[in-house]
Length: 103
Image 1 (cartoon, one colour):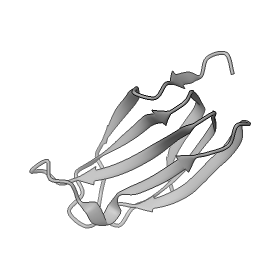
Image 2 (cartoon, one colour):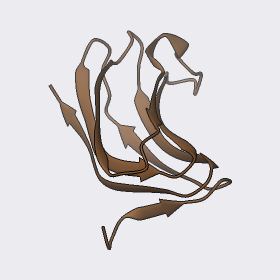
Image 3 (tube, one colour):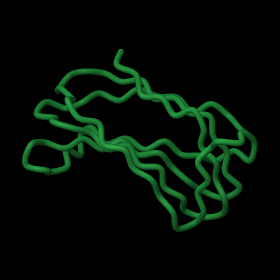
Image 4 (spheres, helix red, strand yellow):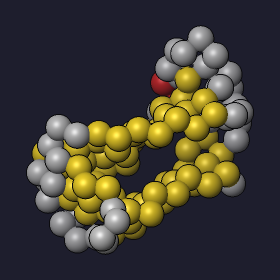
């Protein structure tokens, strides 16, 4: 709704989450819609700021109507932190109530 994050075709927003440990699982959920294309990407990094690609996961936003986006990610061994990115690709998108919860 009214306090959601609005993305256009060239915008993005990120949040860094520290104190991430290898093997821990996280449930992601969001309420989102997109008139074009957008995604939520979770990327894990080690202490040397290198991407741990085995843990990277992307959730596509494809519905014109608000819908629940859900999924689980597992931090690879050697994880130090993760970055959650909201990325507008085309059209207009709205993301609300994004939650990342330790399982």
